[in-house]
Image (cartoon, rainbow, N blue to C red; front, side, top):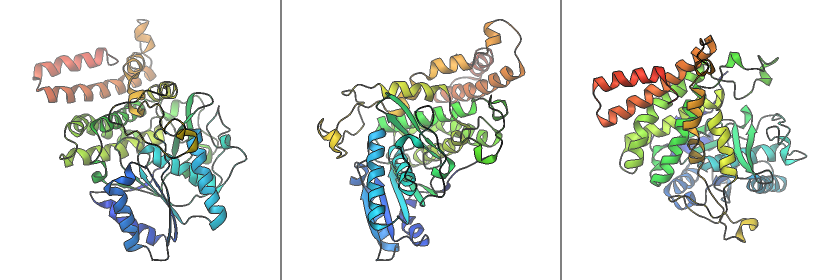
Length: 407
């Protein structure tokens, strides 16, 4: 089953958000925005579009206290703000999220918690940390406008956060969390630093490969759910997700190096990476990811307070619990935390146990090996294309892909 947001793509498409809000007859609007993005042209474009196209009686609240790599406290802060505003003035007619995955995920959570306040914050959180309760009903319309090409959060029903008490990473997952509309505008990533573009793009790469090599939907240990309502968001690799995942992998291997090298002037690379991020989101958002992301949670959640990566903006998000430390917190970019274990992961998942034991492969192992061979070949061919390798080298490479795809 494919669940995804409606998508609109194109340079300048951010300026159309006012039309969408007007068509929703939105009068009370809540805008979530990254505090760094609030200083950039995409923010002004959103405000301009709203002012031009939404009837003048509209009310606009702006929440800009977004934490880079959100945690349970930042989620609860946003949830409290949104819930308090709805209690005082009524529910919002629409929510807009302008920023990277941190902003969009924060907006998803706040939308849920303000519409259906739980008894405990962890009621909706995935097990084992939370109860994993399903979303009770429809949420307010959410328009997600990404300003990075990485998480694909504009397409998924997942909101991820660091859980500080347990020093782990978890999230909330349900189809009703996904945005009503994702507006994918390549102009919005023009201001990224090469470091942010690189690690965001690496996240796309791992989304694509992990979802394509995940356990197939018809071989999951839990079997077929008794009801479609109980079908998990992450179903395992499947024929629908495969289309998006393999497309994203091919685009990412070709255009990620270009976007990092020449982000500001290479419009084609920006466009292709934005589409790759959304494509990978539709792939992994329905198939799931596996060990690279699973292991990344331990890497990201254990970061020390003074660790930071060059090219990422340090900022004070304005919350009292972070003002004491100057608003700063340690950061391992999500893409870095994911890719750091990827070589070991694919070396392991790409080498069947029967091969290790010098035995014949089972059909399931052959299926998995074929998937890894396909991904490895795409990566190798892209590398050789950049290096101008000869046909003879390609023959050698293809033989190596078949014999040791994990390597």
